[in-house]
Amino acid sequence: MIKEMVCVVCPVSCRMKVDVNAAGDIFVSGNKCKRGVVYAEKELTNPTRNVSTTVRIEQGVHSRLPVKSDVEVPKALVLDLVKALDNVLVTAPIKMGSVVAENVLDSGINFIATRSM
Amino acid sequence: MGGILQQCIHSGFGVEMFKEDLTGPEYAERYIEKMQLAGLEFRTNSLVTELHEDRTLVYTNPIEGYVEVQGKAVILTMGCFERTPGQINLYGDRPAGIMTAGTAQSFLNKDGFLVGKRVFILGSGDIGLIMARRMTLEGAEVLGVAELNPYSSGLARNIVQCLDDFDIPLYLSHTVIQVIGSSRLESIIIAEVDEQKQPIPGTEKTFEVDTLLLSVGLIPDRHLTAQAGIKLHPRTGGPIVNNRYETNVPGIFAAGNGLHVHDLVDWVSLEGERAGESAARYVQGELTDAELISTEPGNGIIYVVPHYVLKQVDEDVRFYFRVDNVYKNVKVNIYKDDELLKSLKKNVMVPAEMEMIKVANQDILDASRVRIEVEVL
Image 1 (cartoon, each protein chain N blue to C red):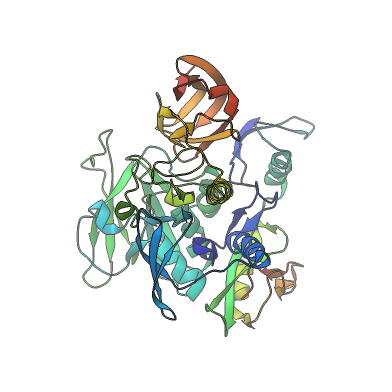
Image 2 (cartoon, rainbow over the protein chains, first blue to last red):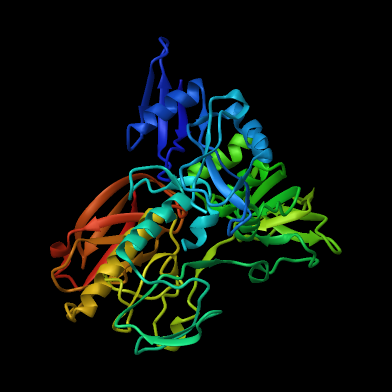
């Protein structure tokens, strides 16, 4: 069955045609780079997303520090992970790339600062 | 430093410039680090209030007060504004709870305030879509997005990962016809529109919401251009420039969202680099004048930037343009005068996604105009 899919890996938003044969092999066309194939395979088996959110920060120029997951997160876990970060409170100065929450909800996923503050 | 990027905490930046998927603040920090390494002087908290044809400008800030400086060259990179509730003649009451998506984004991502619990979004621009996801993640309920056009004005990836992922409905060919509320917004009424964009009676739907976010277009910031005598383009809303990104005023250059509204920050940076390079050459007296080749939007094209190309040997020209409608299975043709120079096949073209075609500079030097056109196959 041929399925139409929009690749969300980057803003180019490739419109792809994805075909799965009886043996479960996946054929992708319309993708401008090879990451489209990886995305299509994951989307059909275990969809994942990048998660960006913020945590509270004290003594910074703003009261929130932007953070992101260090790996892609299974779609079903996204809301729970963001909720779990409600209790995180950090203090400036923080360097971009430093881990602000480790192994959140025992998922093995860490959240890292996406700016220095 | 970093402008709007600091509140755009989502990823999708840097795919072209750094071959990495970065968030807005990360992308900004890469450039801030470069700037610090180069030892560039900068001012924050400063507002430029005047710009004149002789490249004199006035800025104010709390430390220095009122300062007048003359640049050997000036590059305008002021970005753009969001269209406001007042600019779209929103009918009804004037309660609290109606604001642009970017305002809500700033409150949420920098200050930590969620501006509402039950939200509706008018307009399917990228910031609106991103805020639909962001507010959902923070516990608000987003009831829907209404878009006046029969197609989305945001990137396809954002429809998928910001709306579809959270089952947020997108109402195409719909608009908000009334907002209701005494002190705080209480409800809105949307309706389907016909081909003339007029609401169709009988299609009204009411949503009880406390917040309406607007994502209905961006307008280049041009508050400094009139005084300096810089000519503006009626469709882009920004200055008219040549392939060196120089405006009609010698030594004043423009790039980025203040020139024309982009979808990809990477392309903004590329334009900025080109404008910066030209300004440096101008300061060193290396830029010479030449005859102009005009670039014209043909069938199906809204505008082309740059608006002129100088008749002299230079780097290859990157033409940026947008189509005026959704097209499937088309060719984009570039004509040099009336001769076909280049033709590219495209499966899908949408107004929300800016297109770019690179043309070798020497290929067009003998032309008097270049035209870009959509040909439906």
